[in-house]
Length: 128
Image (cartoon, rainbow, N blue to C red):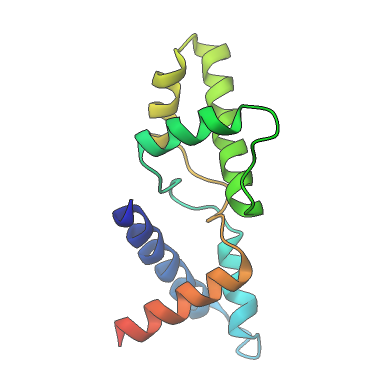
């Protein structure tokens, strides 16, 4: 599980550095750029197959939701892609989950603005 968080953090930090480098307007606050990157598409979902199957099963029950809005949005997005694959390609649920996790891009990094800033600062500190 930790390996997925580390990969997400590295990818996020690289995307932030790229965005900061492309920023022509040097007067924009770093926090604003970091927030925009957090909301931009990410290379993947950064969760294991085992974790995803457990969480998707749990959240499919009525009344069971994550307290973290960003995480719940991620699970809903994954569930939507899984359902679409099952219907369009006739895949079984577990095959569809594996397919989504192995190749689909995520619509964002699914981080709260505060978390995004914390990750950016932590990675910046350790990269020096």
